[in-house]
Image (cartoon, rainbow, N blue to C red; front, side, top):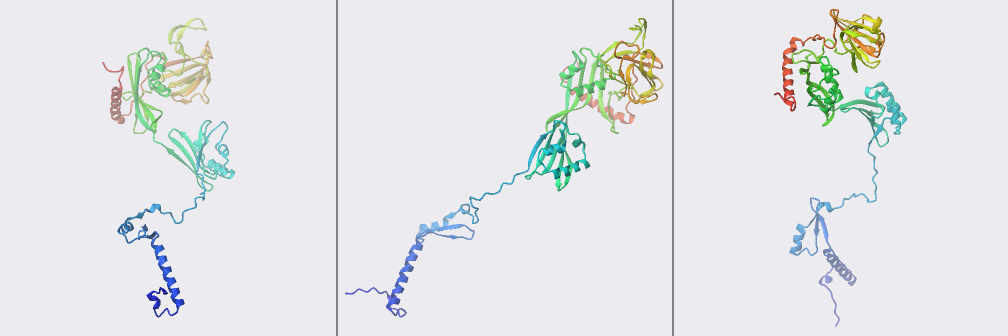
Amino acid sequence: MRFDYQPALANTRILKTSRQRKLFLLASFGMVGCLIIISSLVHTITNYNGQIITLYPKIGSSSNLKALTEVVIKPESIEPVNKPSPNKIEPIVPAPSWHTIKIQAGDTLISLLQKLSISSIQLRDLNNFIKANLTKAVANIKTGQSVGVLLDERNNLKTIKLVIAKNKTVFIDQVGPRNYKIHQEEKPIIKKLNFATNKIIGSFFSAAQEAGLDDTLIMEMADIFGWDIDFVMDIRPNDKFRLLYEDKYVDNEKIGTGHILVAEFINQKQIYQAVRYTDAQGRTGYYSPQGYSMNKTFLRNPVKFTRIGSKFSTNRHHPILHRFRAHKGVDYVAPSGTPVKAAGDGKVVLIGRKGGYGNVVELMHGNKYSTLYAHLSNFAQKLTRDSFVKQGQVIGYVGRTGLATGDHLHYEFRVDGVHRDPLTVQLPKSMPLPSKYRAKFLSHAQQMLSLLDENDMSIFTKK
């Protein structure tokens, strides 16, 4: 018995011939196979947020339906469409870099830059700019100073940095082709109050160093009290001093000291006090608590000396004449060439040679006072008779001209033509502060002296 498998569709009128029925059957089997293959594969679709939803086979099951709604691939796991090739190398652009050069003897700013192989054209333009805009900082670069130079990736100069002080830096910047600009940056200086005190056992200088004072402050204190105290002859053991002064800081780093604000010196039980004060006109000075300037009309000593050779005397044996005679001045022993200063403001009434005095200068200070300086090796330049001089101005130099056995200055002080001992004469007081500043100064002085007492934690505690 012959068995013929013929689906119902095969008997349709459309499929009239056996060839057509065979082709239809083949196509049907092919479509069913494709559906089976497709349903067994994992499919992905993209939702409206751009996220990827994974579809699993056998979608009809409840577990797979739950997976369809919950399983989501995170966005960071998706590789970008335009991901660069891992073999592609991005070019590295060098960043501008700083170079530090130390100045050697004979260097100039331009010669320093030549060491960095900067182009000659740029060096020429920079040199022309510096000549046209010469500043003190550029003109006064010194051996040992460091210069910072910023160069770009093509070795073109961008910036020059010159540190001219602890808180000041000068920059020369290139702001365009053949165009430069100079500007300065300044950090604020913070001033802090400091206190120092000590008792003198040996010398004033060593006692001041032990108290932590630098040379500048030591000299400032000697200058403040120098009209009242001879720091060579008058200092005694157990003399005392105390002071308040300024320390200067930049970025919490100490860069130096400022001025003494208030000071006290006890010399041979005599108390001297000085307060720094600036009036409304901007004039600054040191004054006693009563408002008198510490700068007296006359200097006590007109020369820095090593010792006193002879003092004022009415009957001294002369080392050359070998007879007794009055010595109407003081002999200050000092090396030849030591500057001699005018003791006060005055007018030159005599300059030249005068017998046993040798080279001499005589000054008149108003109608009442006069001073004489003898045995000079030379006179100050441009000093002539009738010249007016200021206190402290150099008028000559120590020598041994005339009747002198060694280098020294013979100094005389006269009041109304009468010789007085320069070491003990009562010097006239300077003018006090004008009355319009007096009340304000007295209040300021009292505050500063009170502050000095508050900071005194050692030998100056009041008994």
